[in-house]
Amino acid sequence: MRIVFMGTPAFSVPVLEALVEAGHQIAAVYCQPPRPAGRGKKERPSPVQARAEELGLEVRHPVSLKSTEAQADFASLKADIAVVVAYGLLLPQAILDAPRLGCLNIHASLLPRWRGAAPIHRAIMAGDGETGVCIMQMEAGLDTGPVLLREATPIGAEETTGALHDRLSAMGARLIVAALARLDELAPHRQPEAGVTYAAKIDKAEARVDWARPAVEVSRLIRGLSPFPGAWCEVQGERVKLLGARVVAGSGAPGEVLQGFTIACGDGAVEITWAQRAGKKPMEAAEILKGLQLGAKLG
Image (tube, rainbow, N blue to C red; front, side, top):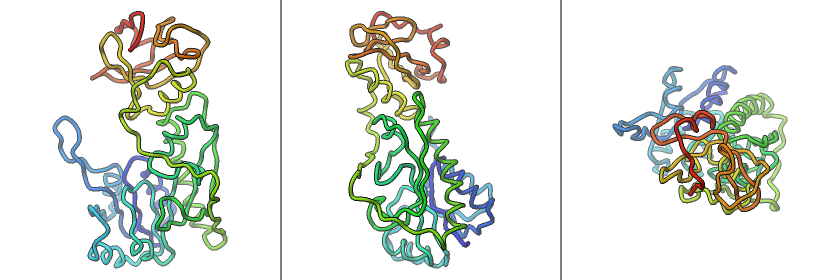
């Protein structure tokens, strides 16, 4: 098929690669414009732009798709279909209608649960036992379209957003290739009204650990925000990111250091397995404790 690909972050890259490998013609790649990044705040292309340019594909990064000019440019590509995955802009109806077969979205949740911006983070933070990927026909609403194909996967007891992100990205790449190959035979299923939840963007104010919460919730928060933005606490006045955790036996005052990097919570305790000091690389707990004195209690 002749495809317009629309995606921006690292999650989208395996999907683009899979479409190319499957022999589809990529008419153009749409992604978000380069953003200032790093200490020098130099403009850095998105992961999708960088990979698309390596593959010799045409890249477009309009700031908006609302203008008649942008919509005419899109329509001029005469695509059979558009494949959208974590693009970052809402698509106006004129864009949705332009490809001959419409637009398909790869969404990293079992819709209608976790519509919206941060479905992987929210699934872990909520303690969901499973999540998955849906291939959805796009319409004007936010992730409301009918689902063509879905696949579920369990969420591991110690799995982080980073690890689950990579698994779902690979799953989405495989499913979209399968969906395009079977497009004529796949029946769209409307999403049920029951069970709708929204995965709001992660607010940095959520990231500070509250040790008074039950250990199971603290563990979910740490794993759900790992690696970005990273849950954090204060260790002797220093902000430290906590990137991995498991629930363990133990009790004490909330924030009390019990043994090693095991910390008492409002109910139970968590063992921190990975952490990161400012300006340092992430380390396993045993390594970081060689140079970090926890004291009696964490803030």
